[in-house]
Length: 367
Image 1 (cartoon, rainbow, N blue to C red):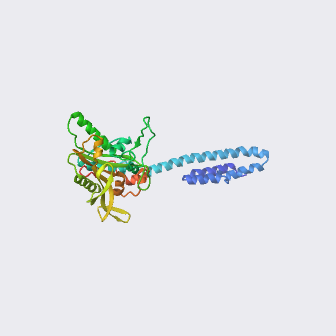
Image 2: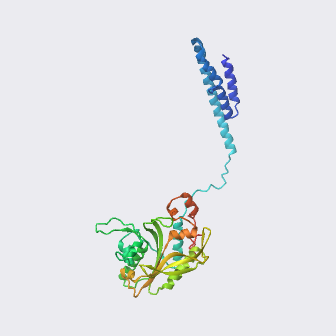
Image 3: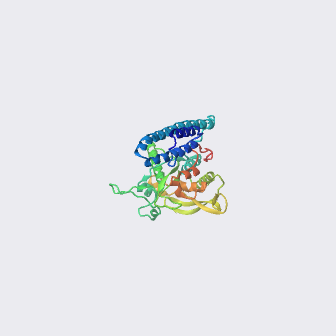
């Protein structure tokens, strides 16, 4: 058996000469690995006599332990040297600006709500709100939907279980109930003060619900409806108001046309179309000779005014309603309505708006 002292001296010298952790590991494997020099010597113990094993066994174990300690000591030194070298090379310039912190973004629906509110606000409209859960009276009856009227079938309604009185509440199918509540409140104020009914000019943004789901329909969606009531309002005011809105919203001159239609709560009723053209997959509003329906509108039906105690022989007005999600899709080139509700972070980052941006009060658009 080779002199163990000579092996120890030679291996410890190689350990101390290792310049980095990789070189140190090569020395360790060569001496103490499965096929290392010391390991091979230890395998010969099985062929020795008991007396030889008694003599050489403790010496080999002591050699192995000493070499392991030497490797551990050298590793600590090399690791410290590597850390110091890294600290010296990886200098941080504390005068540089910090990395940008990820922030949230404004959802396109919220952005369009804000834009519409500012544009109509410039025309003198106030924002009114109402509950999402409504009664049949506010959602249908007061809006000239008689019981079993076929127009009710146009709205795939989410109904709740009947209450103790047998009445079933529902998730509102449009924000038109806000118009009824606003009219009721105005009538009550007029009766209390003994004055004439004050002019009303409001928009009602909010969530609405219908049993429908595909690429352009979702069970929950968003609307903005408008209502104007006074003594002299006529169809020309309605057309001018909506034409100004779409031009301001789409930031271009937009051709419009009004086609006769039917809504239970307006008479006469109309759908408004806007001009556009398709270039590839892109829809360009305000260009071309094609027409796209964008909203419904009309003069408030006399029965709606009567349902809240307003005399239609004295007061009249107009109403309109439009889908906020659809407006966002058209303006910002969003192809699928269902993505609005998917909570996809990449989608929100791409289509969202900076929370620091504010609508421009003169145009209603983000700066």
